[in-house]
Length: 169
Image (spheres, one colour):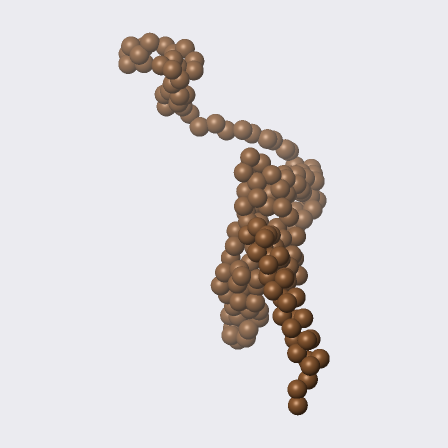
C-alpha cells in the first residue's frame, strides 16, 4: 500500500528543515552560537551561573570534583562535580579588588571592606560589642626608600635630584 499523504507530509517536513538550515547559514557565527546555546537543555543552569557572577569581567572557570567526608567516620558529607554543568565547568567571580580590572568585583569588595571596618569598630559579625569602648587608631605605614624609584622620561627625571656626589659622600 502506498500512502500519498504520508509522502507529501514527509516532503513538507524535509523542505522546512532545508529552509531552516539555509536561514541559519545566513547568520553570523555568534548568532548561530547563541541559538545553539538557548536550545541547549542546560541553558537555565548556564543562565544561573551568569547571574551568580554578577557581571564579572574576568570570571574563573572551575572544573573537577570535590568530596567532603567526616574525619572520624568517613561518612560522605557532601560532594560536587562539574560534569553536570554546562560545558562541564563552573563560572565564579574573579574577585579582583581593582576597579580598573573588574568594576563589579571591586564594588563587591568595597562593600565587604565597609562591613568589616564597621564590625571591627562597633561589633557584630562574630566581633564582640565590647570593641566599641576600645581605643581606635588608623595607622598608615610606609616602607623606607632605597634611592630613586621614579622613571626617566625623555632623558629627564620626573623630579629634580640632588647631585650624585651628595649621595656618595
